[in-house]
Length: 216
Length: 216
DNA sequence: ATTACTAAAAGCCGAGTAG
DNA sequence: TCTACTCGGCTTTTAGTAA
Image (cartoon, rainbow over all chains, first blue to last red; front, top):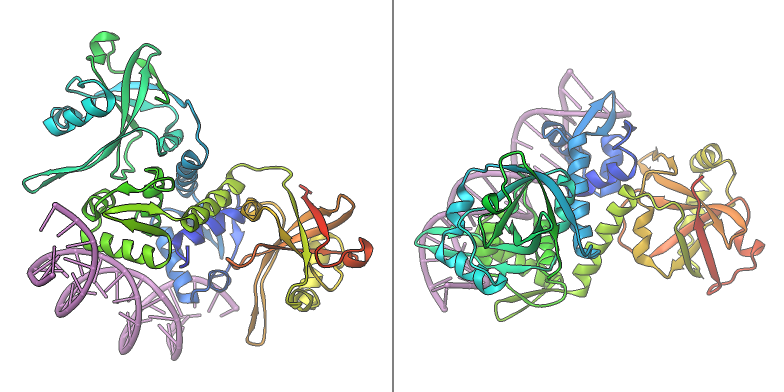
């Protein structure tokens, strides 16, 4: 907060309406507003352009779709922690992942932690759901939920995660796994449960499901 | 968003509940989660501690009041741009500022822009209000409002600002001035109007006023 | 296990300045 | 005017390692 950063610039552009229209703003104005040099402002804009966060046209600047999406994601992350929405519901379709969820869930350390903290021994496999509302995924970035701690085996490091109890198709209890490691990948929710969800709920790739993230 | 930063760490701590309680988190876990080195994680924590953003106790971490406040400010800034609250109302008391508002408002360039964009020639002076809800000030960081552009006289640079039409004490039309230059100072709202507000509304230092930020 | 110091490399900043 | 390049200096990072 103390130091001005790229983020401050993006937010500045946003609050000037740069998401909807091209706004006229010189590098020296930006420099003055942020307390940086004109050269740095110029460099930052060049970087943003490279990263596809802004478009420029005749001394005018506009935020791209992508930038707005990312800022919105940040907003929703913060919203998730500051305003506890008690019962977010996601809908989406079943997809077959890379099957690496299977590997992780089969690790004794994770299994033990899940048993302890969620009260069930998970079926060795995850159900991957491509959610319809990827934006709202960030609402899950909040305090509640069981924390699964990281551990090491030899030199390999296995990251921590958070588990949020969930109700799949309004029927089966399970949990959503949110790895701590920030990942900006495809908007997939990984679900674990005691049972084999594909069998129990007769799911195939493309089947529609609902995930109620319950509060306990 | 691409690069992990101090902010990501703060938000991570927040979403793990670090605002309410001490959480156990090693520097190598942080390093893994954020994709940085253990050494950098360590250094960042030390910096945060110096800046009064976290407390540490026996390998445990907790966000301070200050950190939560600053993150909340960021949240409200974003909220202001993503969710247009149509009619924020502020309450507060009149304070006498440094009288530099007076100087700026008397500059011909600013006066002309205000006349053009707000439709009135401002009284040469600003009414400074210390608001009761400093947090909500960030809600004003949104798109709407007239943009006052920056300019230079000789070597002196005069920054840009945004003006939001407002109703003072539910009676007199005026505008709130939000300088573009990000300032983390005292939570003061600067008001301009056609008339001398102190006289017209019979205000003294300490008088209570309401500011309705209207939408047009 | 931890955390955090040192030192060298990598990256970032801004004055000067060109186009 | 404006933007953006170069380059010297400063800052930040990380590997190695001590405690």
